[in-house]
Image 1 (cartoon, helix red, strand yellow):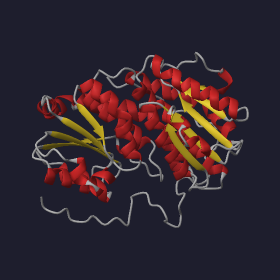
Image 2 (cartoon, one colour):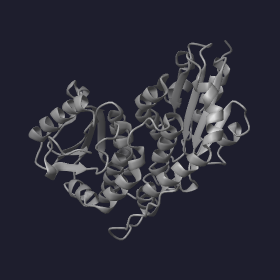
Image 3 (cartoon, rainbow, N blue to C red):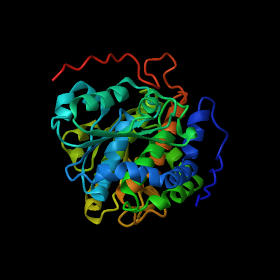
Image 4 (cartoon, rainbow, N blue to C red):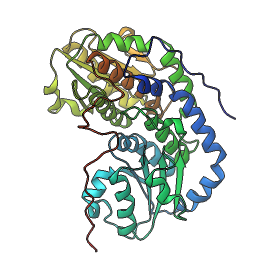
Length: 388
């Protein structure tokens, strides 16, 4: 049964140049409910395709995409490995294209290539599926895309070894950066391959709705109003991958005007900590796992002692061990796996990027008006793969 999720009321007039991005951030809870309904309606067909594939004991599942789509695979990897009991790896299409024989070294190993693609027209997205077919004896394809008319969808639509899973049409973001396209594709993969084995997915729409309707947007504005020159995003496990996507979103929407770095909570001390200045803001994603959480709390408190008050915030589903005044709390997700928590948590990063973009005088719908960086990547030459 479809869950009704209301659109969040706008807190202010939509700024000029942000029409698409503003809407696409706020439509996500509704689209997640629609994505869940879509999957329920095609569950029998999906299971008929995936059942024999997932039954292979030596199956290797490769989650692939470029840029934000690559981060979708990184966020999903560990949860899908636990849910399926199979080897799951996240390998970017850019790595598959540039170094194919290393990525597909075991020719006889059955493989499911899960391709994430907003438009399905990026050169590497198409090349990765072709390379897999060329180098592997048995490769099935699960194509998760927002564009039914994209090259990736149309090339795989009628293949017996492929299943094209479409997200709601509105999720094909018209703004420059991927927001609702990312989360709808991530949710589709978690639902399709993880089924009911991933805790917290059902709570995501309501959690995100509460986040957008509550005080978090104002608290995000308080952070960006401090005009930090640099941002650091930190997390562990799936939330470390979320940190990478968060930094990318900030770079994209500010047109590179605000520098951003991401790392794991433990890895940051090993050199990247040199990035810090007194004009740096730090966002730490706090794990729900009791053991992992300790490391996230350690780095949060260390950064809070090193930087001016208000420059370090935690994004968490549970308040224990955290100061309320510096915590963006995601309600209703205290029992969720970190991969599920990433869905509403990424909205915090999207709001930061949107606010920072506007503060820099950049139009987030098109932060590169001269075309230095493109919504669908251009300028890539796909070189023929030598015969092996």
